[in-house]
Length: 412
View 1: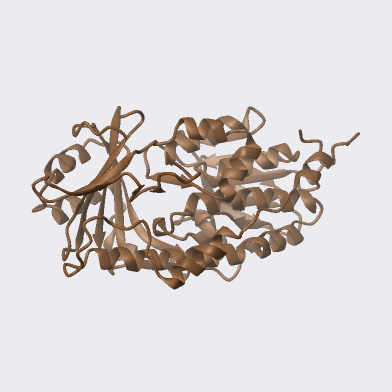
View 2 (view 1 turned 90 degrees about the vertical axis):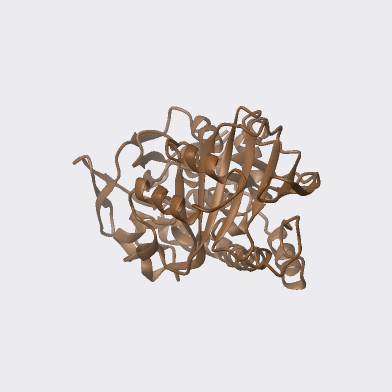
């Protein structure tokens, strides 16, 4: 009969409640840690892209008991069309979609906010969530991390994990300015919710604008066709600090100016943008760091090693990394330094390959928008030897098995 082993570092503060944070919270709670999650937003953030649960993330979801729920909430797309500026269909396919890849694969495409809700619900009442707050200051020594929140409250934790995205505030506090780690990939991606005025039935429609600094638009029906999500892109080598306003209203003006002369459904999509509460615009960028940990603080997911949406593996990386980090902390509960080192050792190659894969995809997408390119149906990924080798390496990644550790810690 197993007995519960109480970790020495029992209290963990996680900054960020999107995908990586709630996944880590779930597993740490199962291992017997005391978990607090702080999130700047007043609740789980609405909106966001359609994201993909693939490979090892499917296994993590299965072990969490949420895979069936994830599949029930999938986008369930049947295919996609490409149209011209007048809405005339140039091509269609029921084999793959631009957003989700091969339709007959075991992967699951799901809205980011739907997945976040499922992961949050899975954690149960044993996890403390602090919404509408964030870390203001952070000081650590060999024994503890002293945190002051924006609300003015002060608390002490054994460990802190920054799972607060590509623009991680936690990373800035501990590792220094963002510009030391962010590599801009030359583009910006915007997304917001719109009515399904095209009457799409589990379908995706794409309008490309080759030779233009704007990409065109993609609209996909979601949530059993009750609504749709609109996606746009803008090419610019200007880094976010110079190109991207912090105020969402100014960001909307930026998009409106860039697409002022666009055809197809862009005028209507832009009209819907002004009142969309879930509008989001951000850079296509990667985060590269020599190490993800310093003392009692470590980074998770996009905060430490964002691959950019071009990878198609950000969610997979986040969930697999959260599972791994929790497992390593539970394996050496009296030595967080050893756990952090093992966490990085397990994931470093997978992260590097994911980031390299994103760069190949990004190059292929740019070639697709070259006016000399005649491919009316966008490929799901570039088909060349380098990509094939990376796909093989990524597919070979396997999760470590921490089930014995879970049993020893008293988890079910």
